[in-house]
Image (cartoon, rainbow, N blue to C red; front, side):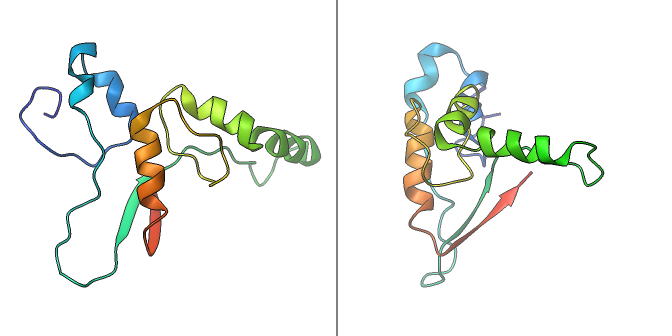
Length: 117
């Protein structure tokens, strides 16, 4: 609906850029969910990409070593850049996507967040 210009706001991640023609990208902006009750603390829901080790993994140490490598800020940042995702940690390098950077800065101002998946 948003890409068809039948909606003005949607709860989406940075990956939304892939649904729009290049000419429409300058019209995209990030905004927090509107305040409903004045004075109520701000919370926000956002999605993150993550990788996990199965409980019954055969090579648990190898998996832990991989996760330690994968979750280094520079490696995680490179992985997330492909789809414009918000990082699940706050020390990743800034994204090349201004929507992601705007979301990261706004999320820092909130009282709490939840992660959708």
